Image (cartoon, rainbow, N blue to C red; front, side):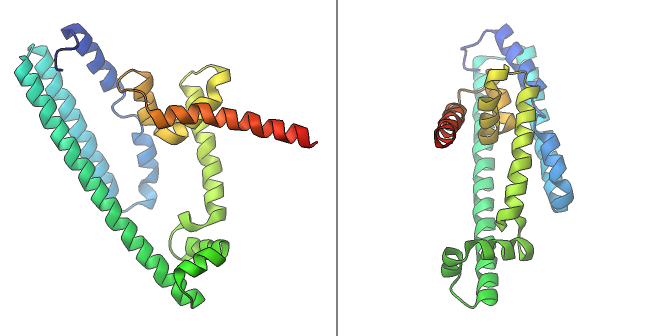
Length: 219
């Protein structure tokens, strides 16, 4: 937008970005049955906002808008993004505090001890209890089942991206860490490399090879 791309290059990037705009929406829709009604309302509102933002940029490029207009558009979108990110952060902090408070209340009522001590001394018992009484994510057994299924999903996503067979494991790790949206955008050149995600791509296969070596040596 600031002049680093030609008009034709900017149009091509826009077309690529538009093609990836709704990546990941299906995963959010899958959560709808377990989420409050407002969840999907906000997802759809965000989707509409993104569509309008793309449409505005498309109009600006179509009329070959001036550098000042494009810069103004960029600055506005960045301000709105920072605001939305802040709202998300505050909302998650508020949610986490409420969840922790309810967790501690339930543990104290069930075990008759300080919650921190219960978690330290009886982590699995506490987790399974909370998984039934409060949220499945506290349960070690339920989370193990979920993470196994989640990992299979990420492997299928890696295969769907068409990566070479010898890179599937690394890309599965990348998708597990960075999510389909970010990894797809990174592969398409729409965002810079994601350092932590790329670290996962290297470290997970390396760790498996080391573990395999230890297992072979132990036989």
